[in-house]
Image (cartoon, rainbow, N blue to C red; front, top):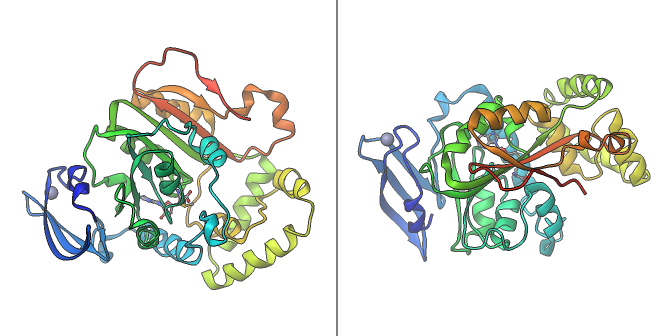
Length: 337
Ligand SMILES: C[S@@+](CC[C@H](N)C(=O)[O-])C[C@H]1O[C@@H](n2cnc3c(N)ncnc32)[C@H](O)[C@@H]1O
Ligand SMILES: [Zn+2]
């Protein structure tokens, strides 16, 4: 943890400021130490990462499963998103598409990556010019910290979206890619992010969309099995599954199989989809309702129901919405490309 992060942290229990006692430092990083608030709540910094979790015995079953599953997943695919290390890349286009920002828009801005995993999107947001704080519940934070510790404008913390250890009203931009549907209450997780935005701040969320009835039924029974299997078996199953899908024509997999169930061509995506302890599916009207509740204005989305013909050629699996606190000057952009 860099000392500068202290400017943005707040006690997750009582929201007051924290003071730092460093015990071990390596260059600009505090590797071991303690963060304490005026009311006596104390949080450890361990392995360079401030940890804002309750003791293991007090965590909910979902929190424990999330920590175990996603921690394991991101330790296995620790370089996923780093093309220079032989993995697939988060390209400028992928980031623009999923996070709905343009290159340069984040320059000099404070950005929150809510549910950062191994930090692949944290790094992309940094490449887009932001100073970025990545927060995640799982041990993926250790991977994210290792991946990006040399960058003085990236900070990684372990904490829960429902109790963020961060000050309110400080972020210019918050994004959450593929996370809210894994929290057990996507609406409440979304609403807990919004107070951390500045008055002129913006937020993008990317989450699972509800599929057709057959797709939803297949997803229900398939995940009912796969989420009960040991992770070691699911690594093998994900590899076997992609052995098949990579031998089939890409268009057939993307636009054929995906009408009936979730099919992917990389084991990471298969493992991620079929092992996540919980994965809720949502609709645009539902998420527009959250925006209203939070007092936000929609500025961009990928709502393909506005282009009905697209329904027939594109699987309808993801949902992306960008909104802001201030009333926009122009109508929302429907940005699906
Ligand atoms: C599918 S991964 C996405 C990670 C990253 N955003 C990406 O796209 O690479 C979902 C992440 O959400 C995190 N997560 C789930 N529930 C959370 C919660 N309540 N608070 C913080 N992180 C959470 C998991 O630990 C996991 O790393
Ligand atoms: Zn406190």
